[in-house]
Amino acid sequence: MSTGLVELLGDKLLSGGEEVATSDALAGKAAVALYFSAHWCPPCKGFTPKLAEWYTNGLKDKLEIVFVSGDRDADAFKEYFASMPWKALPFDEKNKKLNTKFKVQGIPSVVILDSNGDVITKDGRAAISGDPTGEDFPWKPKSMKDIFAASKFIGKDGPVESSVLDGKVLAVYFSAHWCPPCRGFTPKFADWYTKSLKDKGLEVLFVSSDRDEAAFKEYYGEQPWLAMDFQCRKEKEQLENLFGVSGIPSLAIIDKDGSIITKEGRAAITSDPEGAEFPWYPKPVSDFSSGPGLLEEAAVFIAFCETAEDAEKAAIEEAMTPLAKKYVDEAKAAGEDAPKVAFMIAKSGGIPGQLRKMMGMQEVVTQHEHPLEAKEAGGGWGCDGCGKGGGGAKRFRCTKGCDFDFCEECNEKAKVPVKLLSKFMLLNIPDEGAYYEGPEGDISADAVKAFVDGFLAGTLEKKSLEQ
Image 1 (cartoon, rainbow, N blue to C red):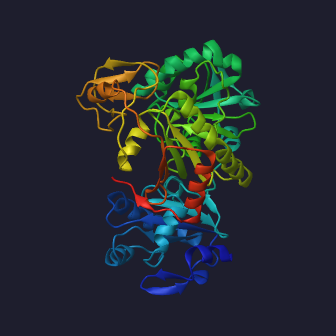
Image 2 (cartoon, one colour):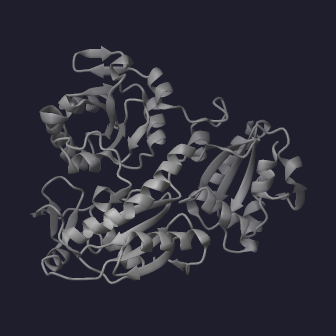
Image 3 (tube, one colour):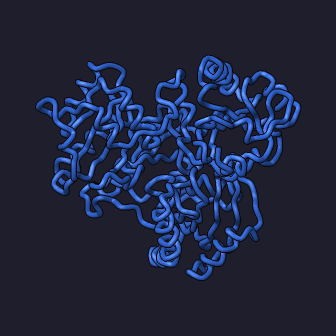
């Protein structure tokens, strides 16, 4: 075992009621699983006994598990740890630091490390649950190339070889017939593909989340591109894990060299259905109209300028771009998934409106970039102005296919002009929902750099999001 794990976890671990040297506790283990869990968490209490059974029945010969507690006090930690057959970190501030380091967003969560302390996978819970006997230990995620090599593909005329994807910009489309948003998006996407995007050089691969093969065949019959064979269920799950798919419809766009261009392909294509910016390389400064970006993964500098004139918004974006590009380039060179600081601009409502509320900022409801039309309310939707669930309220939905809705009250508010000074904030959700308040008014390149430098130096006042 390298010194990397000792530096990460500290010199001592708990084994039952005794302290043991970390180097001794982890000696001979090819991998270590950090188990982020808490006694108060119902899903944790359901998962822990299963994990304990798998560990006891064979995994412990290959893997050591270290409990990283999210309990509220030491007594709860001790009671919960007493039910576990593995090791634990002492109950102290190191627990929170590990949550931040590995950007743990929810529990139970399992991060698997190799003997050097390097990450094998942050989705260890799914990996172990899908392979509790450890046949694929240490569960190193497969690359897209490996997944495709084990998959079968079909076209409109029958089976096709995976080589048809070589040298193509590829949109991997996760969708299902039972999903209403999918059924609304697929005909539009098919139309854009047929009229323009196919000629631009885009290939599309449908990956089905349908419940049976008959539904898959019926739904695929409406689609003009390629599909992964429905029998490739394992490969489907591997692709979902690779691209972090948490809901459908979802689109990941892959470059010709196999690198990921964006996991927010649906927003990219919806905003540019003719492919003027194909293949939609992310800009250093991303717009919330294209999705939440890296909010859940990194510290994000946000310029709120919803009520500014278009010229001012353009100037603000230009001022942010040099520093944003610097961090993007550094992350790419280091092989990191996210830059040290990401940069976003809030030009209209939706997600920015919800963030304003969470950070105690003055709320503002601005018109959406596309016209809205009244729709039947139904259920399962939320207002992008106030953030409240739709319920039986009157619903106004984007006519251009954006996942955007206003309730009747916000739709009326958006019609009344409001003028606020532009303001920047820095939001670091992975760090327990921390945020830092910036000045308002002039958002120059120097002001942006000074604020970000202050954040990185730890000199800014740290605040916590309102829940």
